[in-house]
Length: 345
Image 1 (tube, rainbow, N blue to C red):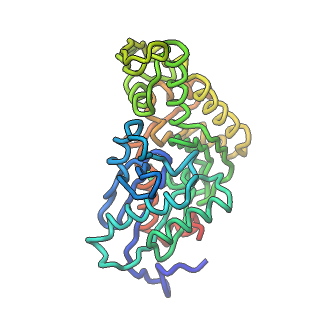
Image 2: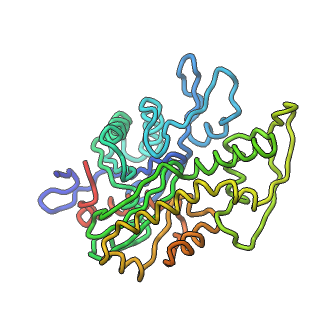
Image 3: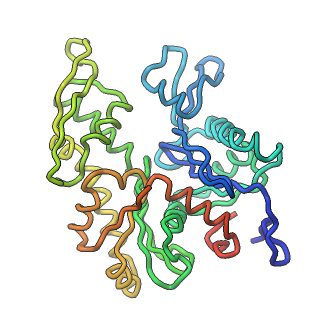
């Protein structure tokens, strides 16, 4: 694999960008500057003309609030591109936002974090979107690998490192050694599935229809995977399905914990499966080193305690789990020679 980044063993500086193209959020890292953009992966557009009305945070504020002629959509679903055209528009906007003042119209080289279980068709969609958005060259790195590098794990050594990356659309568990993924398990369950479980619970138990943003707020404020002794309550506002009138109900954290058990247990089972297929020598490393949790789902209260109880292994949650993947991709840009083995073109 030939990289334009280094010739004759010397590093040629180019305008390098790392992108974590996530189901819920897109983060962009510029070499030498750090993370310069963190926006929701949402696009608002007119249905009739496909004219863009908002991208990122501006569009997310429109979710569930748009008039009939405008729709706010998430172009990525379950960790992969569901709508290539809209993703291309969104990615072009984000790349232009970070490059307009920095690189004087030079086309950047882009490293994109992708799910480890991505198909070749989905890879092509990522490559096509990044290239159409203005990238000169596009390289990909598996998200669990990028997350491991982002938290500072020695991925290039023979020592086994296990990472659980819980995103908006996917949960990926990987055992990493010698700059490669030795074994991995990927399921299309993540933060979005948990939000959907809360929406269903409110509809069935309270006859209350709530939106995506409200369900996410409930998850963040009172959601938990395991009883931590810190029980909470909150008022949830929505539309009464019987009367059609807006109303408010009081919800307890124990109810939310019970209603999200199905996606939570799916994540726990995926961790178990990954451990079952781990080679014995690497399994002994994991006993000593434990498991690192990254991604937005790692912030769910009590999830680390639940996985620790189910596996009898120490669980470490990164201080800033939301940015692990893009930080890791950024470290790859900072030392391409060291990490060239983890990239695919």
